[in-house]
Image 1 (cartoon, rainbow, N blue to C red):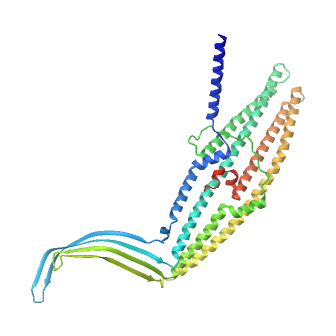
Image 2 (tube, rainbow, N blue to C red):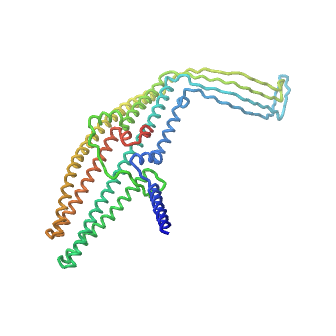
Image 3 (spheres, helix red, strand yellow):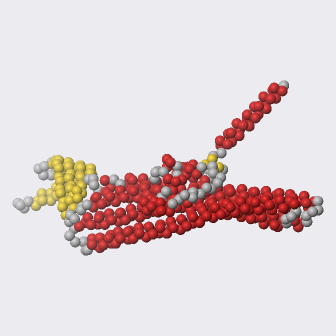
Length: 453
């Protein structure tokens, strides 16, 4: 009998273990790289920009540039019905009503621009640059996405840290309320102390409820960036702490910015494209050579005359050489405007480089400042924790008032909050510096996605 009960208990425990294991398996745990990988596969903005890149890839062909000939196959049938009246030399007149004639033809025609002053070459080079521009636009979208998602990932960690701190504060207030209630019932504390402890406990409870909303909002935002099917899915993130990287180097960041910043690369591509537009306009200064050829069959049917049916089968060809002699000075005007556009693109690139230098300087200053604040706030937190331990011990002995204990409690919460803000702000500056220098993908992205743009 006991053996049967033991076996039942054993199977019951095993069932609980299996159920718990299934429950844990059902919960999805995401690291930062998991979030990025999921978002790169599912995010709608990235999928749209990749489709747009595919369009620019499809356009970069020899045929679209004009290198290749065009070939047309055409055929048709036509006819006419006429009333003929012919006056002969002897004065007589011949008349024929309802005379029908028909023509049928089919042919193959080829048109080919052999030379147009290197305009075709400039067009093809521009299409290839636009193809590379599509790749850069995709990379820009991915970098912005990775930066946004990384920032939201760490924001969710920060909000959860704050929730833990507020819950810890609520536990301290609950303990204080318990102590006050016990002393109030034995007559060693006044009702005012009890009411104040209750007010503080309620205020901390309210803070916890408000913070739960902040955690929910951040989690929903993260799910939205990953484009999860269920935007309210209760995902669990792997990290619970924010650990900034204190080893970034400003000189290396600036070198990487000049070489890899995607906005700067796009600006340089725009300058190259404006130079190709100028070459395209200049090509009109040179002659053009066009070739055309055709091969076809034509048949004509007549109801009058000595010929009933006439057939023709043959080849026709032609070569056209020409040059635009005068177009109202429009060509010179367009060339002057194109040169100005090239100069403007160069100025915009220089302006952008100066702006990037200023942004890097500001982010670097904020990064170093927040690193110093982070170190300082860690020391302040240790002091605040020790201060609260002393305060609660004195409060339990009756040597400290409730107001003074509350001040120590608030000081501890503020120290925890300042450290959390310093950690998060440092990490955001770090992400911004890496994005500015074009390193955000290699730093936070999964290995298989580093070059997937």
